[in-house]
Image (cartoon, rainbow, N blue to C red; front, top):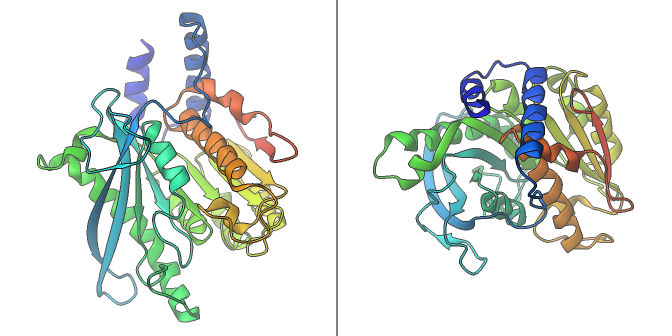
Length: 333
């Protein structure tokens, strides 16, 4: 019966958050009654191996109309766990499919794989993680001046939505094995820094079930957009982050609507680059510990609100001082 209810709800993007949360609680209760097995720790690797594919999508620039080539990296679940490293173009997993799609937007001057500790981890948990490069604002492009940043600001959101559409269209292409495992009804958007801002700005398109922003750039400029959000959101900040001060991220969090599940992760000893693969300055919080915690909370958040397994809400109830403090608000408090 629960499976039937969930199947019906997946086709209704306008479902109220309160009803979604109620379903999560119901799933949690039924799961507790029907099984004595313990939950998999969300910081640990998931039950799948990880495949990796590269695809190129091209759209017209929103500013110039010229071709905008999106070199995209896709991590996805595979049946064979392999040696722990992503396997290029490996056959996708069949057990457990279809899998939700998670978009990831990189930071300014970054690359799609600059947070692979997280994107690979999510793929091992049964997510298809899709990360487009934002042309003109990647590491390969070099320094991005004010004009370049303004152009990227306009183009990044459409990049994300276009990439999502292209990936979902793989379902209609019998030559694309990835298409067969994609769940078009369960999606999320994530990002780091400029990519975190991109994730928030793309959310009002109504295409995503949840948002996770890691040190989202210019958070106070996102407050008006934030006030209109109607899906669960998690934002994270570092106490040693100079580029995106944590007090600004906190003000953005506090301005979010009271009716949506919302989470604020504060890492007192983290810097801006703690959220990338390699912490590059003032790394008081070890890289390994930062990644462990980010993987734990983001995975639990997506399991709760995209997979809709309410049992994972328990991991969103408290932080782990002194390394991370957690604030929660909205329906799921």
